[in-house]
Image (cartoon, rainbow, N blue to C red; front, side):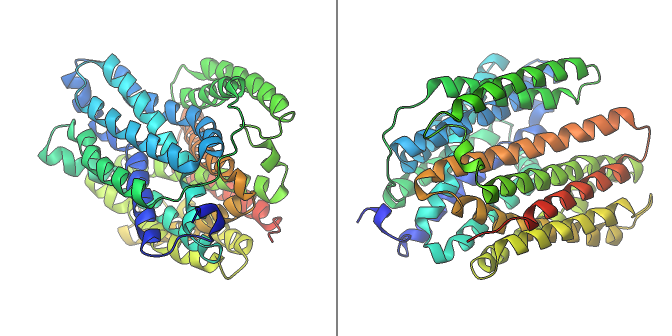
Length: 450
């Protein structure tokens, strides 16, 4: 039977279908951060400067960002399984190309292609989850997806360090090849076929989308450069103009690439706003705390990684449970409670003093991780469930875009604080994060779901 007529997949097909989603999503999320650890080795081997080596990371991030919404739209047009499978295939082939790069130019191009493949995976993963799990278990499926993202994000530096301990940086990419092949085989056999709208692809909107989000992310990143403020403001200005044109164009279309039709729904728009606030708050802490641990407390890189562990560990433990609870309880209330707990945790971080013990740090970050995990799964459930079934691709693509924008906003705020404030960075950043969490909690509280 066609998956469109079924309420989810039967087991064991459901388990295998989610397994391929989990494998691919793990690879895509890991590759967003795993390469950071290897940049010194890549810089030395390819005989390039550290500044030029940053393009290995930037090329991937920009490619993912500008491709998410176009590929999500294409998923609505030709089916989510096709976009996912092709994205995974491109990602796998590009990973092999990255491992065999001999120059920066070749590696950067391969990373762009890899980023497009990753966007194919990320843009439709939540949409596919909607067809894999029955409606009564949608929160459970979303919770498992949040678990995969949380664990993958947290494990990036550790996985990179483990691989680099026994092998060269090329293996950071080569490990994707066998995993990708296995996931492709499972996906071909188990992923559900989804409806295809068949409407035309909007190339003009795709171009405006690339300019808007590409320059916006690049502009936010430019704030991290000491002399990049003017350049950053110019890029953000151009992005705003292109974005205004994109919104104006989207308002006239029945099925727009930028899902303004979904953003007109208060519950959807508020859920996106809360998601961006939460990821901005989290990324601010993730960036600022290692500086505090290493420069103020004098801890090693290994010790810093250990001190950061309670946050992602607690998130990983809570996300699946929060997803299951959102199938039974009001998800908007769970989301509000999660963000309030996150705000309390960040306030505790802000007041932990200049010489906290390991235990002082651990319980505070555990509270943050608990709140973040309690919020994410119910919020993602609302995002996908509040969109019409045939617009699942647009909702999925916008959810991933919102996550990236929130993370970039958080990084930009940290760069601004580091540049303008002489000391007490961690305290101020934690208070700002707590404030963002409270704003998100307030937005979440205004939501009314069916």
